[in-house]
Picture (cartoon, rainbow, N blue to C red):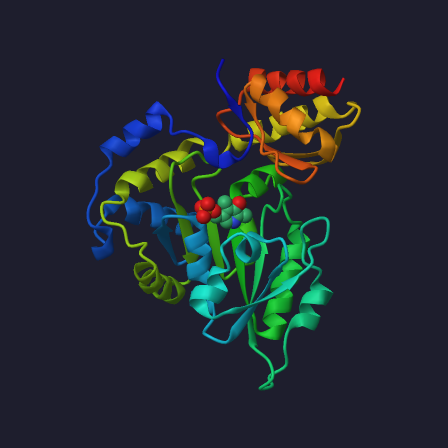
Length: 337
Ligand SMILES: *Cc1c(COP(=O)(O)O)cnc(C)c1O
């Protein structure tokens, strides 16, 4: 029996057709700017999302780091959610490598950073303070697509207070598909956007940072410094192109399966579905049953990220089909009923 892996949408494997596109890719030395497939991917995403330029990078972590370091200088500050990836899950890179001070703020339950709190966190121009330069948002956040009116209000605040606005859009296309909007409609509020190709879009590697030409030129220099200047990277960019051609609209299938999975679990004793948005389902199980649950799910060949807290995140992606969803529901019912 095949494993069903619900730990993350990063676990997707490149399909035979994607591998074929990678094998056929025209390549050159991208550090010289001579890889036609990388150039095409960067231009395509810049065009689609409404930016002057794009930069292909190995990971979303590097993409966000380059964005933060391109917007901010040593001694500057960025405002960010306490549970945001760019604050909590990137090894403190902005502080460690960029000498940029984070100003974390608690996120509201809907994933937004309350704008009155953001406004209060902007420092006056005074030698006591770091210079507040940037607001950083994440969309989707724990699967939630941020409301479009909120993005417009965040943009207005940044304009009023002279801040730049960056989006960690690792799952931007999930947000767009779930809102029936184009990715460009979401991206237009931001000065820079980072998009992951290696999450639900199913590419093996890669993210793209989008922004103004001058910002991307700074990011290109920083990418080299960070060791992210790759050579015949078109092999990887071709997977990204294939993903954009074939795997965007189908994200709706993952969202529908996440909703079905949540529905199948709602009435179980001892298990609480705490949230379901886009391709993610969050459940709580009693802490004292987690070990047994893990053993039971391993037996059923369903991989869940069960850690030390009662909250378990399940993520749908292209390598989990309808029978996979049913098998997961059945296995959880067998345990909890
Ligand atoms: C996955 C992810 C990233 C970047 O991840 P990499 O693993 O470095 O590619 C950034 N932000 C969010 C919200 C993510 O989920």
